Image 1 (cartoon, rainbow, N blue to C red):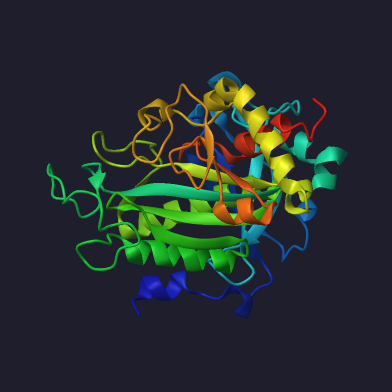
Image 2: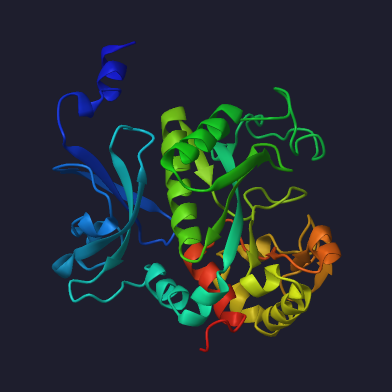
Length: 356
């Protein structure tokens, strides 16, 4: 082990009670993740024990230079797979000094919806299928693709095995284990249809925790890719042409949907989603029109349709749900770069769990 690796791997608990808390927040683009660390006097047992902090919003595109202070409110924490020991990753949302949520803070509004008694009673579950593409650094071209060229056509890559089919598995598997170590509910991974593209699934997660877990999973992925010298892209259509785009299919159920007779509740919920199709599309990610073309397992962005086991639909009902007469449905419109706080809250609100 090199001296540097030895220092990085130091177990602080051997010599001090102090811990390192890495505060994470969402930057000005609404997709860039920022973080900085601070020392705490000892381990914590609840987010309320974590102090508020601040950062220079003029350097993240979130505040003017003459009034640049943005306040971080710690909301949830997880074990830190990089520093390990008692060290933690802290997911925060951001506010002005007066206590108003800044525009990129989608968590604040989502928390109001998920704390509504009607929502709490229905126990909304989410499973989010986060697709992403690994790119070669500096050239922004998918990992292991020939520079300026293309691999063979799609077909053998989905869940494929072998050096000519699976590109970046070491990064993907490291991410999987790091998320499990962190302590949230990552439920699986797989290679996607386009070579160099992968997916991880978060959930089932209840309410606001789905957004927290997806954002921290994205952060951990970015950190691992940083170590590997690879770029992570959440662009919904990273390569034009006859290649699949990248989505974040959002699976959803409520207590009423999971109980006997739930299929009728699901059908009513899908009808409500259709009536607000344009509103949802506007919040489902930037550049989604390049992905939702009606090809490559998508419905056209201008239409809404649903079906049983239909991967070309806007909303898909699984065959098992159809047979059981209860379960969940999958909203396939969401882009890979969507904000999970906004999307999960909007789905709950549209389905009139909330009386808003």
